[in-house]
Image 1: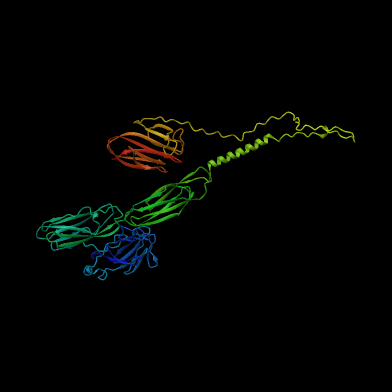
Image 2 (image 1 turned 135 degrees about the horizontal axis):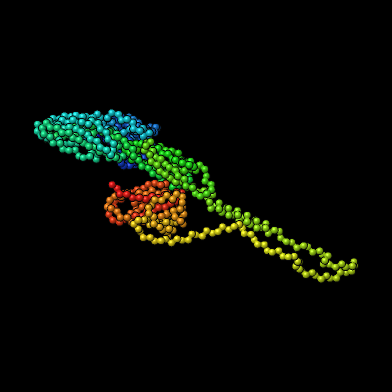
Length: 590
């Protein structure tokens, strides 16, 4: 702990009741779950970027950076990105930790530093955080915390600061100019020492200024903060010390104010790109800018077939912050009959009106009654109808006419005992007239012919030729088994739509492999491909483009530095459902 740059003290009360004090040496002073926060707090209830303390004039502000469990002052949870002024000895809470702001006094410092603290009170520190409202728009920054000192004079030198205030956007550069005059009767050398910003922001070390007596020289110091979230937006005080080599005690100090302006940069992704109804997907957003920002997520279904839950999201993110949003697609109407349907939707991640990223996804909806079931039901109906019609055509069974008993027993006079009758032969067949022909049974519906597999087309193995691609067309989406067709293609630029790519190949679920040898010059080349659905590109068996997934026609590219000579290119493509499209090209880079 040093007294010259301590702005305040922060007393941390751990969950077990132990306490320790931490020096706040700069603004902003950030607290979170782990490094690189200024104050790491290891409890799982603490977010990665939880909260920051920021000096504004003579007030210390606490700002919640979008934490999951919140930052609390008493019973009040702070709103995200809305500063709240803290009084000395006021307690705020982060997870299970209690933190109390304390002033820097002799009583709060160790004994060996107390006297120095009284003699050299800490200077005001610049506000490095900038300020942003909940919409992500910057709040105008007020006057500098410490006003610039643009001129100072010592016994041997005079320094004039030519640029009191400068501003820069990370990735650009700006110059701070000052004039040094040697007031010593003899020649002298002067050393420049710089502080107030990270050393890596200076484009070059400060020069050694050599001046004759009475001479002066203008020195330009270049500041080039990198385009990185670490180059936080806000104001910084630049301290420039000029020291005489002849008399090191003769040092002059001037101050300038540097304003780092905010910039917006972010990345986002959609995973997985292909889901089914009521399944979960995720959108990840990373704020690669140097200031907190509010991002908006919206979903678009052009056919209005699905409801997205949640319907929309607003994501406040600190600089270098990352978050992930989970959502679900719920069908508005069931898909009753037919083949599986593939519906397209998009997710838009917006920072500003003119800064947005869109991702396209697919929803595969199987029908409640698939096509094969409809065909099977129709077949059963035809079969049953044919059976009933065949039985009706046969008619009722023929029944023999009954024979009268009078033809079997002769008349006998009354009173005369009957002789024992001769038993009739049993099972004497009766004539049934002309026998009916046995009816021919009707067929039970017209039987569907079995679809014979198409005759296998033996591939014609073609050697690589200079003027054409060797194209191998497969009857599946994974380049498996033997190709159905092998042919020479002049270019890879096909828009088959919903038509088959070649005779004997289906319109959906096929794949193609093209191979060709080219002679290249020694230089950089850009290889590009646009595909619906997946594509892979190899140069000499080195995979340079790998987009093997369902997609609308998206353009992919890769830059490769080739040595002069022949190189083998291989392009692999697959089509799932709906439209089929593939384009491949390459060109030398200037």
